[in-house]
Image (cartoon, rainbow, N blue to C red; front, side, top):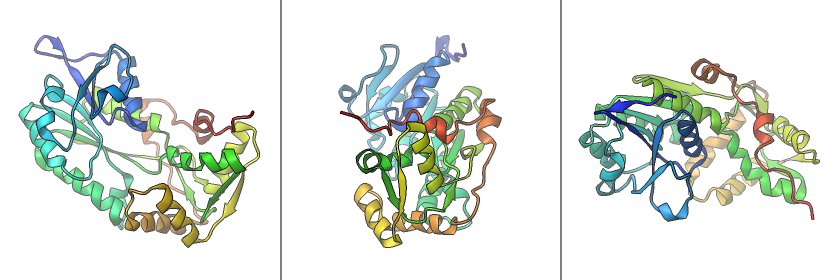
Length: 290
């Protein structure tokens, strides 16, 4: 059991974004490690957490709501907000925060940053300029992105997308969380971790793995770029068109290539990264039979 003391008391770790795919795993893994955890959420009544987890109201974009959350929490897992981060950082400095672990993006390492890379690099620069010791966790494609396929898999046994032979190395949210937790517990300040999953897989290969995992026939149907673009815009209403075009450009560039696979997850956590099949088995793709 690993707990850190501050002033004779066990220090709390604040988790923002604790109701999300990565943050939820960060919360669970910190509790399993014996840490005291506090979750910041805009609506505490809308979420259920175990009794040992402290839940406080607040909004990263409204620094006047953060004093309770930051008090006595020298370490913070920071979910990125695309605007208003400066207010949080000012509040964190006033609260004597000594370590921020921020969820960023592998896109900040790309030769051509694009919309996603530029946004996350801006956030990283703001955190660095704050003077608070920090760590950046930079995952590439998330396995959970493929949950967008769930409805059509369950209803029609099909996945429709462009660039079926484009390869990525998607990473499990549990692994992103595990690297973040190790960074928090080991206080690995000044480091950046770029993460991938353990396999280079095309979209067609991922669909095949889903079908094999759930024991249900699923086929891939190739769309044109414009058809796929319209589909993404409907599914991800908040994503700017520049971001959609960037995602499609990345897919187009990776057709017929193998994606880079990095050993970072195993190096940091001491265990292998979860495979796509292991993730798919937990993702609820199987149709509900009458």
